[in-house]
Length: 201
Image 1 (tube, rainbow, N blue to C red):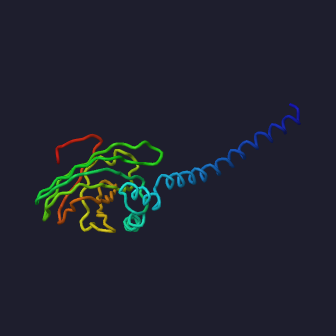
Image 2 (image 1 turned 90 degrees about the vertical axis):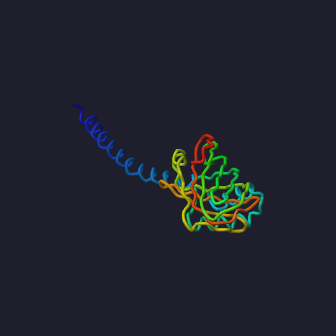
């Protein structure tokens, strides 16, 4: 065999693992960076939520920012939100029905529905706009379950009623404002579905 060709072949053979090794060492770091930036890019900042909520409710960004500040201080940045309308009424036992759109970055909005009963020292009726921040959703199907209210999580900030609901690792933070404010204390849950169902349970 020609010595020159043999040496050239060895050099080429030796260079290949070195190049491959350098690529292997670079790719995981870049992949991790991409995963991190992608996860961050899929979440909503306080400014984005403040603007979207203010436009939806028709209130000032200053008022919306106060409600957003409270939720963000407790839960951080959401990866989705739901905007819609609902009606509810109660006299000890109550019912709530709503419909709206699940909004996520890089995906088309999806229509969703919710309903649920309540029991407690509660009376009145209201029609409300509801803007719900959604945390740790990951997959749309994780929304379609029953969410009990988290005890002691009701706040009123700048005219917005806010409470937290949690189930299966997903946390919701509905923010409501509307006509005919209901007053009282109740135990309740809400069921979210991708199709309308009038059965309250």
